Length: 72
Image 1 (cartoon, rainbow, N blue to C red):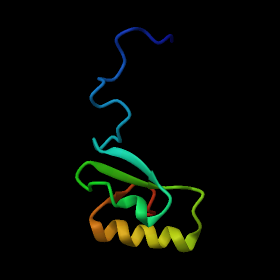
Image 2: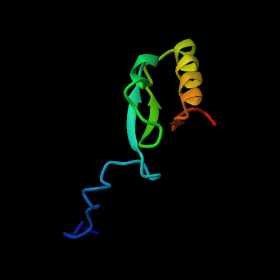
Image 3: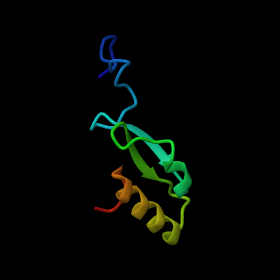
């Protein structure tokens, strides 16, 4: 089946996570500072090692962020 005109997502929600939050890729703890837990969902970068991943995960949970690839 071919894609037809009219099936595009509304521009106000295009590119968002299914929960409605704006996805942000984070590679260190400092990148969490300018974000808001009520509007952003965190993805931990795949280039981050286990030790730093756990640090980011702990800090994100402490600040109330949802982590999309947190393993839970």
